[in-house]
View 1 (cartoon, rainbow, N blue to C red):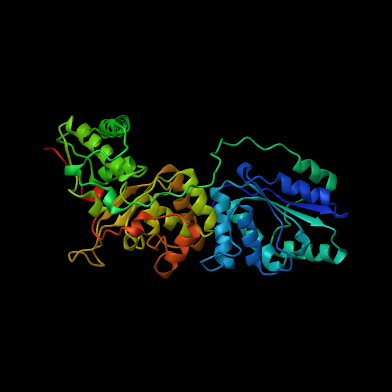
View 2 (cartoon, helix red, strand yellow; view 1 turned 60 degrees about the horizontal axis):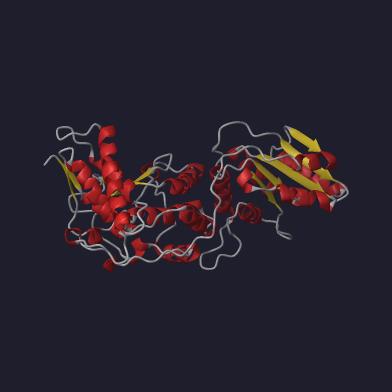
Length: 432
């Protein structure tokens, strides 16, 4: 890993706990103390392993990411596993990492832990239980060579028990992840052409009315913020971000159409016309080939796939509804640093070439999905990749089928590919 700091600040001194009696009470306290939601994890390294890849996978498992035996994809190797651990520690706001049986770590693992500490600023706690004099000496040598003994805090068993009994620090009230429910797949027959739309079966009028009203109010508020008038139209980028933000969390294509109709009315009241494609189904895009990216969806795919760039690729497919060949060309610079929006290349035509790339299509990313696009950027930052490097490299092609199976979540954009531009990119806002 390239030592590029992901979180500003200086890491706390390394804490070394010496448990000469090898008291099981202390190990149990360390395990109970681990609460990822409170920023703390405890790792018990897999026995009889020496390569650093296993320790990185143990850290991923402590973070709630499965990494030992994927069903369909390849096992994550050492370098990607350590990059993934650094990214998820940063994204999940983990501040303390306890490693049990630390006297058994190798020089390679000590070096990787040192780099991980430098990258993330994490408080690293190593517990030595029942070690011999020779094991103590070897550990000291390994830590010294890895640069971890400059500042060292020693704790005995009594002090360690007091540490593990400390109450959790105050943290934001994060949503608790639940088991994700299977989302129904979306077929082309579920969308009716806008000009001939009719109320679908079993849909109540208040529900459709509320969707229409939401679109109308969103359009009016957006126009007020952008000071848009018939003589001062906003940029296409802003229009695309508004439309994708309005529809990306829409539960069905019918809801999407109601929101768009409401937005059209809101624009019309200000003397503007929002012209949408005649057939949204053929165009695809936000609200048509997407699913609501809830905490349940986020929990499912981020726990099933340990690689941050792969999770981000699945997230982008679910949130944008874009074609795979568009997402495959997304670069590091195409993602906003906060993950709030993503730009993808417009479908290629004969008038564009390598020296004159096509314009971008803009997608707003829902709040629960943003950390995963940020994680992909962090991976590329660790790698030292330039801004034009492909963000989702090694996520598509022959790897995509395995990723989708691992995630276990339907992806409408794969079931209903649309080669042309997305509907919100074809939409035009005019003054008449």
